[in-house]
Length: 332
Image (cartoon, rainbow, N blue to C red; front, side, top):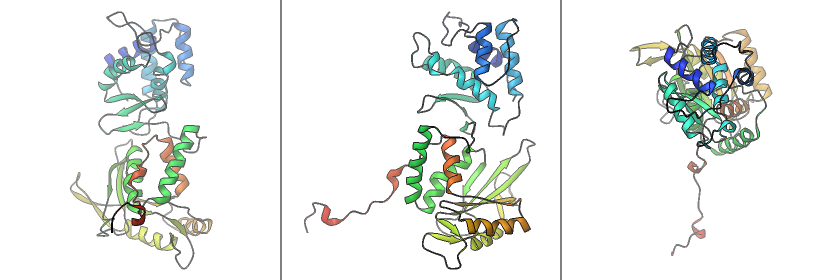
């Protein structure tokens, strides 16, 4: 990421806690040793060398912005940690107990570079890319979850237990893959079953080299198993595997390029469990051929990934409720 010199200079002054032109600073003042401590809190081994503080911080910010990044819409992890540490609620200054003014000052700098900072429900600072509305996250779905994240995971589990397949696609998968940096995430022909060709969702992803690869997703709400006769609430993995092959051989139309393209990779996404037998079966198939083209995710993968990306939970109130007419005070 390359920032304007003006933005780097102003952000460096905020990290140092230098007063603005009106003589007021809404950020904690940091001398030499506290600047070193600040970067230690960001898991960075920068030690202030006694030079001009803001100029030294600006140089360190340039180093951080040159770190590898997942995509053009997600800054380096170290920069995300710097913004979170800068917005810690415990560093609130007199006259700004909620840090509203500090957030406004910081956003004046960030908006110039296409970003916006905000607080979530847990009062943690986050970055949002203005053009794509993508929230920059240090997302590791395999790390231990906090108590708040475990509570969100339980609520999402409740939703998955009662939602329909269309609701799983619209309320969970589309927001999730958009958040993860995929573009043109589109549900195709699922509700009307027209021209699906085994594909419920298609999307594309831009690599750091600016090459574009296309993905298709086959979604099943329930469990995937390997039994010969499909049971209620489950689907046979061999049938899904055949649908995925149909997906890989069928073209999609990319309106941004005005041409048809083939799907490069396919996801099999299950809202329920993928049984051990089904995993073994598909694992043997993928080991023999097309191993790099087909991937699969089950409920646990979805729950963990959705939880750590801090997406808003889908509305539980959209589920239909069947009322007994004898429970209502209606004359007959």
